[in-house]
Amino acid sequence: MLADWWQYDFLRYTLFSGILIGLICPILGTFLIVRRLSMMADGLSHVTLSGVAAGMLISKKVAFFSAVNPLFFGMLFAVIGSLFIERLRKVYKAYQDLAIPIILSAGLGLFTVLISIADGFNADLYSYLFGKIVTVSIEDLYALIGVAVVVLGTVLLIYKELFAVSFDEEFARVSGVARRSINLWFMVLVALTIAASMRIVGVLLISALITLPVAASLQIAKSFRQTIFLSILFAEFSVLSGLYFAYLLDWASGGTIVLMAVLVMLVVLGVKKLRVAFR
Amino acid sequence: MEPHKQEVPVIKLTGVSFQYEDKQVLDEVEFTLERGDFVGIVGPNGSGKSTLMKLILGLLTPNKGTVELFGQPLSKFREWNRIGYVAQQVAHGAGGFPATVREVVSSGLVGKVGLFRRLTKQHHESVRAAVERVGLLEKLDQRIGNLSGGQLQRVFIARALVAEPELLILDEPTVGVDQESIDQFYSLLRSLKEENGLTMMIVSHDVGVMSQWVTKVACVQKKIHFHGTAHDFEHNQEKILQSMYGDSVRLLSHHH
Image 1 (cartoon, helix red, strand yellow):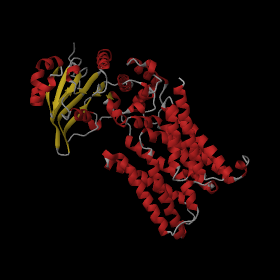
Image 2: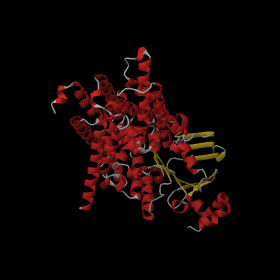
Image 3: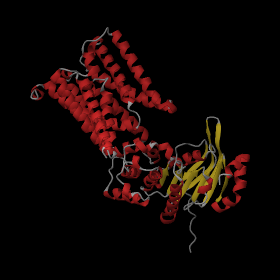
Image 4: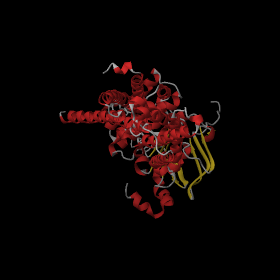
């Protein structure tokens, strides 16, 4: 059973993609959560969905685009959506979290309209919604590798700026940190990560992978750095075990991964409670 | 001794006015802070004292007038590491943030170290020194959620100190801090002024406590109503407050 993972290309691609997603999602997730922006992933994933639908529709109707992976339309929409969120957060200064439901419903509205125009799509759409192992192509993997390199490079290069802006935006600004550019770039990275992770966990479940491992690690981490490391550990465990069981039992990969992440969180909460009780 | 050029003031405001929408908050304010001053900015809620501070920090831009820092107009000023800033603690809501004292204080170096650069061994040393300076060395690797309000406030002082600023600006630093910690806090500030030669500006509505510690007081209510030594302020308090608050002054002075 385990040998299958090396024998078949699509399983290898899935495995590599899973490892990359398990690395970058919790890193970005940690910064999002401490900034109280965890719903951002949800909003952006729905915009990405509408982008994918638009991509499918265009490739169906316009011969020129028929070879273009709908994923890239998803990325484009997600980036535009992230720029909109930053804009809306400025317009509604007093209600910053309002930007997310606005973007979320706009994305979902666009998505359903596009589906109705296209007269429905094939089963492919299901994989974008919930994630499906067999659909991961080498092209998807390359896109994900590109995004992962950019995310990791950014975090390594401007870790201290990201921390400063996340911890205390006003102080960072007074320290002369280019807070606006950093926020914008960060949101673009979140958008790209969501779009690129879609094939594995599916658009509807991606925000779970961004938030759940971090929620678990917040409970026990002793520092910010450790919060990130532990959340990566939890995410990798969820992804690998989730993929394994999904293939073994023929379950939806996204759902299985998310259930594993929920399980990890419950175990962490339980262990913490026991430790407090027996102290 | 040779006559030398008079030193440029640390802060200089000339004819500064500011309004939020149609409400005039500050009107033609003139204000100067000299090197080595420890000035307390007092005024009731909504008097414009926080606005004054935000204008100095470049967080707001005046509608009229000019702000100069270390002799340079604000629009050209880039040496932000010469200024340390400690915000109101309640504004942070930082207790739940999963960071250690060391991580928070290190973030005070972000402007000084510069983009894409990592902290050197020397920087880590200065973080340690700043934490020691505020007396929290044994908490260095604790999560800030485990600290009391007074300790957390000292962490923010350390974060402001770590980049070795010449000017320290504090906004309502004692809100949410218990009485004993407040005295400790002010004596820490005083020793920073005396031993490290810091210039300090502290914004507070708690006139009574603060005026015992600072060397100068400025009273803000749209304009600067009084700007002089703490000694003069103590002696003319009744009169100054009356000119600012009108009749409500009686309520206030009963507090101390």
